[in-house]
Length: 142
Image (cartoon, rainbow, N blue to C red; front, side, top):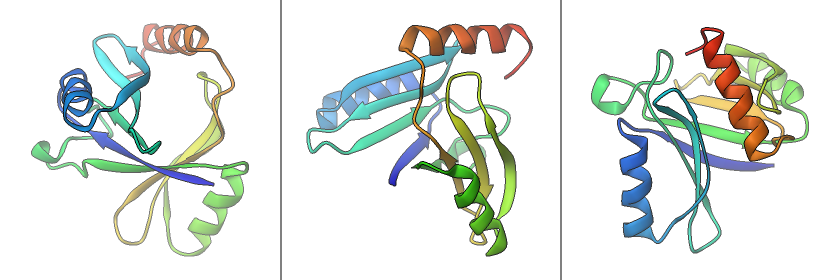
């Protein structure tokens, strides 16, 4: 199991440039829906991972009263992780489901107010992921 922070920032592309210049991070992947970055992953020189996304209807930046950080758990069985979390007092934000971009994911809010995405590794190529997100956006997802 791996845990990775995901920063919700107003201006994800600017943040990618900032963290690349300041921390020496390398952009690994970047996906968008329309003009908004929905997922970007940076690798730090240490090998640690930092994820970024633009705000949306669910995730707001700290300047807009949002949480600013969503923790991402990469695991083999997100259904089990979410079930245990709910048994222990977490609430489901989004149920675990097969996502169009090739992962099985769900989101919870822990009893302390922090949001966590539990999901499997992505199973699609970068091109397939972006195509799935484009199709999803065209269908009205935000």
